[in-house]
Image 1 (cartoon, rainbow, N blue to C red):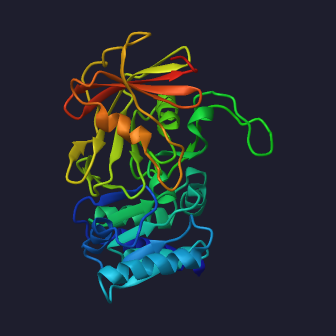
Image 2: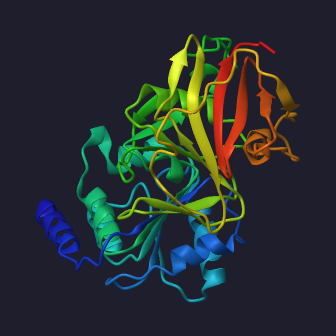
Length: 355
C-alpha cells in the first residue's frame, strides 16, 4: 500500500501542466534576513500549483533552527505566505506531496552530501528528485544556499582547501596526511556541465575550483560569494546576477596543466543585473603570460576574519584594461591575472612560492 501511494503521488506530480523551464537560484552562503533580492525571487515564483515556498533542511545539522529562521525571513517579506518545511526525516510520500504544491524550494546550508544521500543516493534519482525536476518544468524556482548551492551540478565539490586540491602537501588538525587533489562526488544534476561552489571569495576557493575543472568533464564553474546570488535560467542556460555581491564565472575550456601550474583560464565577475550565457568566454585560448612577467600590482591579502578583504575578488575586479599583470600570493600558490577586455580576465595559477 505504501508503494502504491508513492507511485500515485509521483505520477500526479509528473502530470502537472508544464509551463516551460524554471530557475535555479544559487546563493553563496551567509544569507541574511535582509537579502531582499533573494527572498523576492523565491516569493515571486508562480506555477500552476498552489503557490507555497518549501524550505528543505536535508543538509543542515540543527534543522529546526534553520527551518524557523528561513520561514520567518520569508514571512517578514510576505506576511501570510504559505511556507512548508521538508526535513531529512520527512517521508518520500509526504515530500512528493509538498513539492507538488510548491512554487519555489530553498535548500539550506550544511553538508551537501546529506542532500544527495537523501534525494539522489548512488546517483539513482527517486520520486522526490523527479518532483524537483517537475517543479522546474512548470516554471518554479529551485534555490539553495551554501551546501544547497554546491550540490547543483552533476558533480559537486565535497570540501577541502585550495592548497590540497592543487597538490600542496598539508596536515589536518590531527597531524594526519591530508589527501591531495580535488574532492569530488556526484551532485544533484540540476545544472549539467557546471561546477558550483559557495563561500567562494571568503574562503579562497579559486584554486580548488580550477583543479576540479581541470579534471573534467565540466569546464565551467560558478564561484558564488557570501551574500551573493545568481539566477540560472534552465532553458536558455543564462545566468543573471541577483545581488550587488558578485559571483565569478570561471572558464576552463582551454585550461591545461604545465607542470603543477594551471594556464589558459578565463573569468568574469557577475553582479546585479548582469546577464551572461553559460558558455565559453572566448573562441581561442587566452594569451599565455611569460614565465616571469612584469607585475604591475601585488594584490595584498588579509587572512579571513571579521574584516575580510576578499583578495581573490579584488584581483578580478582590479584587472581592467591597462592595469597590467596583477598577482595575488597565497601559501604555496598564486594567481596571475590580466584583463583581456572589458569585464573579461585571463588568469593562471602558479603552484609554488615563486615570485
